[in-house]
Length: 411
Image (tube, rainbow, N blue to C red; front, top):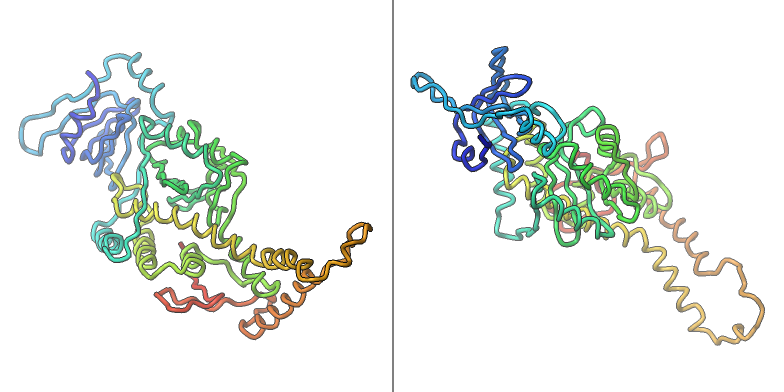
């Protein structure tokens, strides 16, 4: 008997008993995926009697049989929905499925706090006024969407990359990987796809030296990708590093006493309105109340849009930071272009090699740096390490943001 997705989807919200090769579990069916994996909530291990709140994922290649459990005291017993009739069939499913064995679990998310924060975020994202339009595709299975997404990414010169999960490092867990291009955003559900997502093409994209990856504070996710998935990132533009470098240029060589979150960079460099602040604040509230919200399935649509917006804004932030970092170069080159045009040109008649003495246009950079340092000393306080203290940025909508006014909130 085959494991029919359509048949199971008709039973969403009904209690099931799932027998795996390594145990028997029962719970309420919450989601059925195209790769035959099942998501159950309020799961109980029948053999040990231990219950686990939250949700668990059961991969199709590990499922031996599935039974429908009637409501308590109904007296109707159970109904067999699926049974793996041979070891050969189970092995074929294992070859076609993911390599990981057993259910992936997430802790329980308190319903009350989840609804309060999610309602706030849903309202922020559904406002008609100044609504952001972003096209995104959720890639949660290897059929249909995965291969076209990877092929599209391989054709790009620049992409944005962000990740969501719990404690993103070698000791944490990655749930979502957002990769954006100028035309589309892809949200890869790593919780469902598993390590095979990287083996099937994402690793090639992330390690491609010809594709620039725009990220914000890549330290944690780089550690996670390397130690858990064997992915070594190449050609990364980190917007947190670029922001600190731009601060140093603007202050004549001083460094700030701290780095900025993505939220702060967006408001500072892109003048993102307070609506984005509301979105990020609600998102942070949900994550702080229970970080395992990233492993809820099905994942709320309004949170998916927030992830897509983050990937889209990263590309815009890269463009803005590059303009700022290149401003001195642009100014000097403009001076170079006009250096000879405005003169008589008599000295150009000489056949002697071009003089390599430092031109006046470049000498002006030293004076510019001096003026910037003097201004920075007046505008900022300095700590004991000689670093300039960035004033807290008011993360509400402002008419005239000032350079260096950053808050100390985390993304």
